[in-house]
Image 1 (cartoon, rainbow, N blue to C red):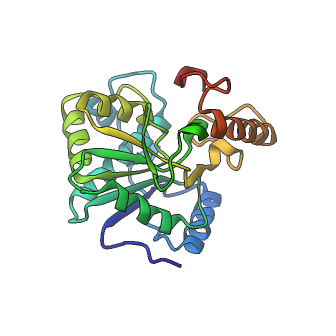
Image 2 (spheres, one colour; image 1 turned 90 degrees about the vertical axis):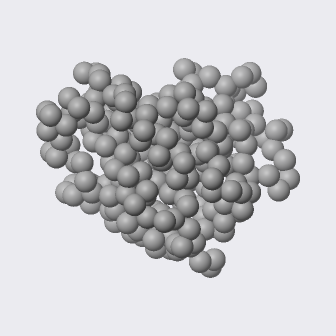
Amino acid sequence: MQEFPSDKVFVRVCHVKQGYEDRERHILKEFGRRGVPVHFFLDWDVADITEETRASFVGSDKLRPSEVSLALKQVGIWREFLETDKPFCLVFEDDVFLDADFVGKLGECIAEFGSADRKAVVYLGSGSNYYVPRWKLRKDQRLYPGLHARCADSYLITRPVAKARLDWLAEHKLSKPIDHQIEHIDEKLGIEMLWFERPIVEQGSQNGAFQSSVAGSARYLWLKRISWSWKKASRRFFGHNARGKSNSRKSA
């Protein structure tokens, strides 16, 4: 097994202090067998967020407490990352499944990415079943320009990206769930959005392994698994739109 590049990559997993023990066990097992170090980020649970914190950070009353918590966790990870001297930061949510050769393919990602001074984010997962269509894939190419963000369950950023996002948030308040918010920030700041193909992470709350900890779901997990598998098969071939038309997040 290839060794994880701990000297280059800062790793954190968004989790909670109490509850979701099934996810904790899952991450410890999943990361352990892939050779990825586990470092949970436990600050900013819902119970930790005061009205003062919410008022200073959030600009929308429509955001759920769980959405604010997840956003603060991700922001906290970026801040901790900048306190280190490592060039890359790898952020996970606590329901992810990793490719069997995750570490090897992460190495390919970093090699193709190039300079750590690059202002870019790499989405490693298949969030909402977004894929580059099969006919656009090129031999020995892993990174492709993304049409938009691909959820916030698994992504790699550099120091310039973390700093730019934090600077933006110092002047603006959070108004969207964190995946949509960082997409908005990155578009405003000209940060490249790259998709790793084929993805090396799947989100358990989307593929039917777990219920969503943010929004919940009224659907049975078995039905979610069927829907996810169908979309995965069709979109890996045609791209986001099963009829081969241009991608659109609204139809996810």
